[in-house]
Image (cartoon, rainbow, N blue to C red):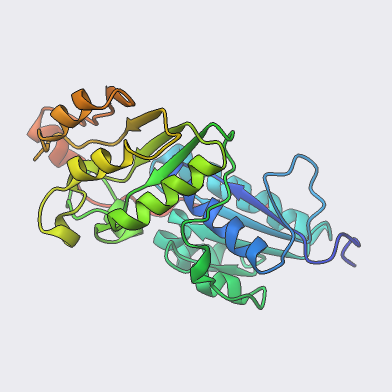
Amino acid sequence: MKTKTQSPGKVNLITLGCAKNLVDSENILTQLRGNGIEATHEAEKNEAQVIIINTCGFIESAKQESIDTILEYAQAKEAGLVEKVYVTGCLSERYREDLEKEIPHVDAFFGTRDLPLLLKKFKADYKHELVGERLLTTPRHYAYLKIAEGCDRPCSFCAIPLMRGGHVSQPIEQLLHQAQHFARQGTKELILIAQDLTYYGLDLYKKRNLAELIDRLAEVEGIDWIRLQYAYPAGFPAEILPVMRRHPNICRYLDMPLQHASDAMLKKCAGASPAPKPKPF
């Protein structure tokens, strides 16, 4: 069937999963627009020729939502409503071979670290000068600040290292640049995220350096609130507590994941779950 005529080169980006995925989508959006490509994020009325789906592969319900969304747009392509469907993100990273076999109507699958390869599909280049100049999809008053990628912890109940790789901290100066950019755009609240905030800095500075990071972020003019999420309890850097007391714009708040207190229960959760099976068209 002949594809419906639509705005040339327009892209619609769909984000599934957590706030870390949303940051990745904002980076994709920034790079596309920086290359002169008309791109929207989850447009209510789809007028795009190309769909990019940023998937989640963490828990079963999120996997199924990703599969269902991929199938929805694969069907739209078959019906001539869109020209291209690209899939990226955690599900694609973990189950790419299975997905390629089961859903051949998708034009290409990309992993979590394949943004330059995705851009090549649009004859676009990765622009290093745009790092830190991220376009926000959240309301302007708050932004997620991803301070690290991946995780080094081999927890039996979690597949994040398989999908995101090992822990990689962003340098403090780079994060300050991002915070200053957001503040100039009107952002008032920074929400710090990573797979494990409390691990921050071990790879770069050979010590847990979250305290210095939030101490310096708190000095960024225009930022009224700083909130910490995903603070793993093991090896918690207690030196952040006096920093939180010293700065009134650091929220007295910690998002701390506790999985289970039983070793036997955690051992039963060991092993990766099989790839979810797509439902037929």
